[in-house]
Image (cartoon, rainbow, N blue to C red; front, side, top):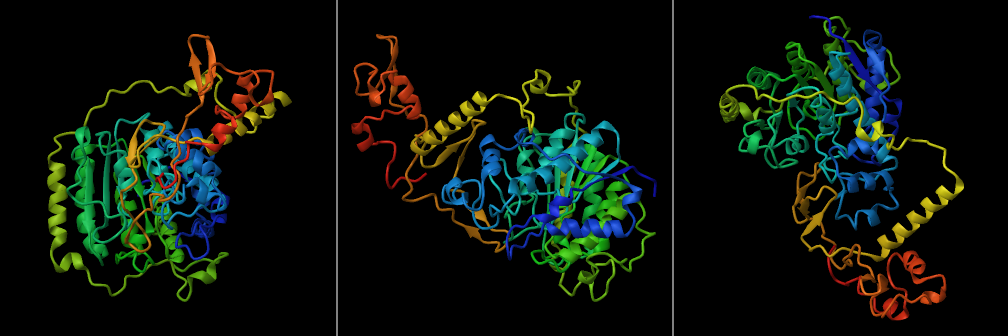
Length: 531
């Protein structure tokens, strides 16, 4: 194989986080993988980079401001309050608000963004970030163990320099978050090979082909239980080859979710380590800039084995490594065989039994045949820095300047904001919610659990008071040319006994009147209404 420049992104802190006792997702698998990669001596053959952690500002290029702000401040103790009793942001038990969740997300997203930037600059040919690949995260909520969609953030970074990007997903679960993000554009083609049926997330049929300009640029290959290496190869190679020929991507992102391996705790395929790694080898052969990401995978020792072998495939040295594992810190985990392998089991391949694989392959190729040529894109010079940074308006982390008055004013502003947040509410309907991007969404949509593969009903917050934002007792009186309170003829300078002016007292009250009559007859909270 030809020699390729490979950059490997790793943050030692990523393995220190935990989703909680008994949770299937184990971030420690990244530490085990790294230790095994190091034991094989592969770190010397590639550039190892400690990625810069993603900032909240960079995350909002896809996610809503409200959601990022929530992740930045949620803790296990405040989760119930900040999620409005489990009806927003984190719904169900798949995505707990564990300690350090935002830092964990910033590591994952930072590696994928850094890989995309390095690929776009031409400094590397292949970027590897095993902490990434969290493809279920949505614009405004977590899903399927995923909080921040680092894949979407990486693709958006690539689109600043490249006209077309191909996303290939071999996770056992459908890559619904990435598909949803680029469903209406022809600059990104998503191609997902996944289990479909009564299985999380319940999406990914071949009827989902994209919409608008993105029609036919969403390719889904739904599979059944027990697919083997040979069967998977017969559908993966022709579909990806046709995709590369028709779409002609400038860069490719491959999500290597390891839950499609045989014996995975949440998976249902019968693919070996070599069959899984074939996807890396096949896409590498096209000599197109490639980013390799992690994803699912819940049998930790098999995840570490496979991602280590796929790192060797990216380097082109898979034939040179010894399949007998070298000594490493986690050597005893890989017993009793202590080999770099994930063997197949005795599952029946339902794709072959009923002949559905041929039909799925035919439908996918027929869809791709309807795309006559690669879409053209008008490219412009990409600014090297944001407008905010160019104008000096970007907030720098750990900045220590500013006098004591600035800090006190900021503290007072936060106090007032919290006061308003506690007493104000919104007049939006029970069905719809609105975010900073102006979009609305309905809360009644059912969500499926990735652990049980069953739909869960999200309690819309019965018997929880409905909040009304920005309702104030203050009104502008054009006659007097000043602010006045409701139920008052003119703004009283004696409000709350303060002769310095009612406006000060009004600001301290969060824009609400503090008269006893108002306090005893507060209309901002309506018992029995849903959030």
